[in-house]
Amino acid sequence: MALFPSGTDVVLRAVLGVLAGLPVVGTTVLMLLARSPLGTGAFETVPQPVEFDHRHHAGDDGIGCRYCHEDAWKGPFAGVPPTSRCMGCHAQIWNDSPLLAPVRESYFQDRPIAWNRVHRLPYYVFFNHSIHVHKGVGCVSCHGRVDQMALVEQVAPLTMGWCLECHRDPEPHLRPLEFIADMAWRPSGGARETGRRVREALRVSPRTECNTCHR
Image (cartoon, rainbow, N blue to C red; front, side, top):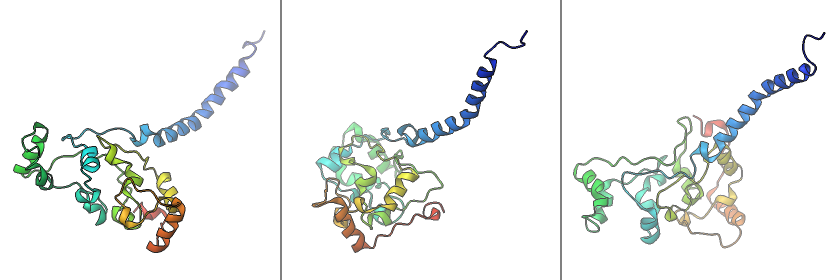
């Protein structure tokens, strides 16, 4: 009389096969999750302490990126404008609106508004805005059509693979410097041909070594 019923070997091999495959499957799932919008935080609107609508400011009023985020042309961080710049307009426009109460409070108390970060890179990643905007990478390439967003959201994955893809083949993403902050700009010819001319004119030579971003 057999100690185990027939078919036990098959079940045992199946169980062992599943257990052996779990690490591989688990790692694959985690890697896919990290690269999906759930992992990157893409397409999730971020609430802000002030209901600032980029559609109105950048779209309707035509306020350029550089007016508020001029630090992007100077160094690593784009920065946010001081409240005094907001009050330059809103001391006269909507100066008694309840929606702007946090702005007035920030201005009169000389205390910055605590904006919530939308685009967040890991602490071990170094990114410099200025080198990109001075080499022909437009704001829209990474941030999308902010002028069409009520609440700004991250539209690009900002993963290492996504960055390297552009560094290895930058030409389709390059534009003349005068159109860096123009979100509606389109190349008159092919994007690659335009990018090739920009690359030659600005001597664009992206690095792909690890220490480019990991310092």
